[in-house]
Amino acid sequence: MEPTLRRFCPRQTMTTVLNRIIQGRSFRELLQMRLLIVEDDEKTASALASGLQGEGYAVTLEHTGEEALSKLNVESFDLVVLDWMLPGRDGIEVVKALRARGSTTPVLLLTARDAIPDRVLGFEAGADDYLIKPFAFAELIARIRSLLRRVPAAEPLLRRLGDLTLNLETRNAWRGEQRIDLTSREFDLLAYLLRQPGQVVTREMLAKDVWREVKRVTPLDNVIDVHIAHLRRKVDSGRDTTLIQTVRGVGFVLREERRSD
Image (cartoon, rainbow, N blue to C red; front, side):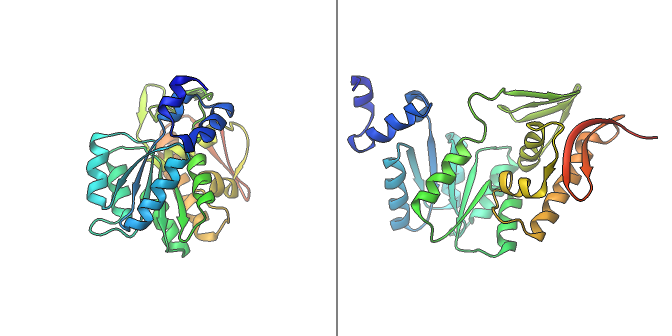
């Protein structure tokens, strides 16, 4: 064992670190995985922190929405694990405030509320994933890893189709010289389409890969259609060439088409 590695890693996490290095993440990258856990129940918060630290993550704990936003003002994190039911400003208000100021930090929302309207509300507020309490710790870890892999290290940071350019690092979008202002969800949706140019993407695929919902449901289909409509207005309005096309009865595809007169 290298002395540097032994000095930085607690004994109980040594195997986890080595496994992650073998899987392709450098030791330096692992040290940079910083999680903010926002949970008002101290027993639950302590258990989450202990388990996540055992997986090799650097964990910071906060117990209220106000404390979380204050911490996010002065420090950067790779991911936020956010309880919905918090005293004072709840999780929905926190994620809305986070997105309103332009933050794209992934947010995993924890809640006992499992009704479809509640899930849609969480995603609409800007959450990236949703986990219902009680949950298995193994599923929490799997969802965290999935969110942290959203933009793979080997993926080109600039993606283009025609005069459309997306910067996956800064999360900016342009058509030609014109900047396109997108919400976090709209950017994720456009990036997903741009990763598969010319290929039809179904609502089921979008529900699973962008909204992180395993089961496709009618209310979520409606939400997807609304987001596509907003995105199309921002990307294609006033352009001679349109990019976001609807394949009736199937889904959507990103390809260049001349607007018909």
